[in-house]
Amino acid sequence: MNKRNRAIQISAFIFFVILMSWIFSPIMTKLFFALSIPTTILTSLSFSTVTIAALSSVVLLILLTFFMGRIFCGRICPLGTLSDFIDSITGFRPRAVKLHRVKYYMLILGVIMTPGGLYLFWVFDPIIIAASIADLFSTDISAPFRVISVTGLFIALALLFGRRGFCRIICPLGAFLALIVKISPNNRLVKDLCTQCGECVSACPMQSMTSTPDHYNKSECIHCFTCKETCSEQGILFDYSLRKQLSYDPFKIRLTRLHLFSLAASIGAFVIPFALLPASKEKRPLRPPGTVNEDILAGLCIRCSSCIKICPTGTLVPAGIEEGIELFQTPLMVPRLGGCSYACNSCGVICPTAAIKQLAIDKKREAKIGTASIAESHCLPYKRSMPCLSCHAACPFEAIKLKKTIITTSWGDKLFVPVVDTEKCTGCGLCETACILKDQAAITIVPS
Image (cartoon, rainbow, N blue to C red; front, side, top):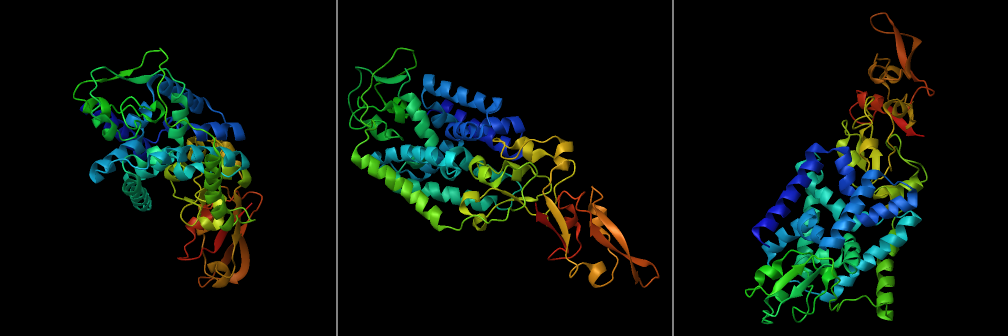
């Protein structure tokens, strides 16, 4: 890759990191996550969540791919940049060419599962994986572990399959863009100057050529121009005119019995572990205000962590496996870490798929998350007859009243104990955050 293309790659990666870690503009974030076309199309069709931002990104990337090939994969995709960086360190050549079909199976798997409410694309979606890498530059304390995991995965893929292993074999977005390229007019041409030396064939990171430069699969080409720069005879030309060029396609997908068996095995490899893992709990956990129902959330949330990153109080965390595999990594509220801010609706604004609805501030304040419940066995006024007003002072809804008792304090005043007004309480959790007890709070939020 020449210096200009490398500069484009690095600039796009830096812009992405700045966008996801510091600027975090809602509209830009939605535009970026919409670039994951399979996810955007499936969630939009399955749950009727079409937005102008999502539609704009989808149309732009489809048009760019149709006229310019998979240039997004080669120069813009942050995960592609990371892959090139790791590949430059390992120095392995690409291997296992026939496994390129696996990414099509991944795409089909996601298409089958998402309308049924089980969203699997987040596991191997390059845009979502790239977002977790950008967390390294944020304040999220768990980010380094996710970055190490992703980097380890890419190194393992490089060891097993060589350069661009994820892009060639796994990436479902790459599979979708490859299907568009199959009908696009752009092509790579081999001039008569070519000496058939084979340098370009071995240098190609995507194995888009087989034995000779003429045997070229344009749907696998990411337009990195490595072959063009490798050729000492200048025998390779990339044609972006609208003339339809026919090329030999040795990787054309033919649905043989072997392919159908491989597809079934791929689906089974993903579905069987999901079936064996714990099912989701019947009781609804605490969710951000405006979150859709649990059955819809499983398919609509893309696990991008945007809501978690933007939350000013830190109350949102990704769900663990104990909530069920279908809800794994969806946002949960943990009021002990921080309640839902009275003047904030950022999670709904930033959500790219409307898994958390965008509510106006007044509507968000009225949204019922849960109800506070006081454990009298822990509460200081109840258990030790000690005055404490922490939860009462923290409540912005005046939902925690003070009830006068017959108990007299050491200085002669009557003791007041907190009582929850369930009609006014929305379950924001600020009271639980404010509880002065060190471990288990005396007041907790019970989900609605």
